[in-house]
Length: 115
Image (cartoon, rainbow, N blue to C red):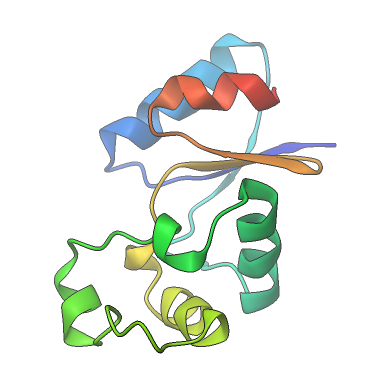
């Protein structure tokens, strides 16, 4: 199974995460999620693998979070996932997927447990 990293090359944590993977001798598939966002189904699956709810994977300090009213506690999981797919800037990074395991690279060293 290939290791996949949802990567933003402008993010230092994402670059550090990619370097950690490569230093393990692994050539990951790099998914530039800002250009090609995950589908709602894929995001739902990854959230399940991470053991997280959508808000835990959201960049809540992004202006768009407030603009879209995503702090509304009555929004459903599906509505939050849709917002993330439509606005991938909201997705925290990097996310690394290795088969049926996933990790959020914050801190980047958290990735090591799934490699």
